[in-house]
Length: 113
Length: 112
Image (cartoon, rainbow over all chains, first blue to last red; front, side, top):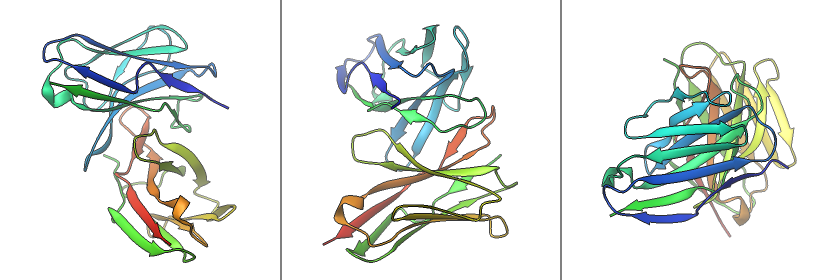
């Protein structure tokens, strides 16, 4: 089975802090994704990556950056956390580029105070 | 731009009945549609994929249909159980860079 793990299930940070969310997948998938999920807004794509050291902006990249130094690891960085970044963050991976099935991690519930 | 809509935010049914969830899309038909299940506080889990030439696909108590004329997919759970209570998401290929687009989901509650 594909396994996608995220570094924390719950995280509480203060406004202005730098926040790192890490995601690791063990199936040698090429593609990795970061989403945030908010009530009434559904899943929104922040960034994604189709290869090591490669990144593409999703629909809502403002206030975020990403890093993919190794194939299995995709990190989401909040350079200066703000209260409007309080959300559920979900990482996913997929084998094929063109809209293939995505495998999600358990999510990180981030609260920014 | 491609859109995908799940018209019902919530659906409440009695145990043993068939639940039917709807997913509508705009513009051109995607080559396939996917359905996911999401439990509270968890990531979505893939359930089924249906291709546009398949019309219907089944997996145990689940059935998915794909109607390119109506631009719609229906997701059925027969003999529903309280354990089927969850949010169900549909998704299509067709984001600006080829990624998946997800609907907002329908929250299904099955009452005993």
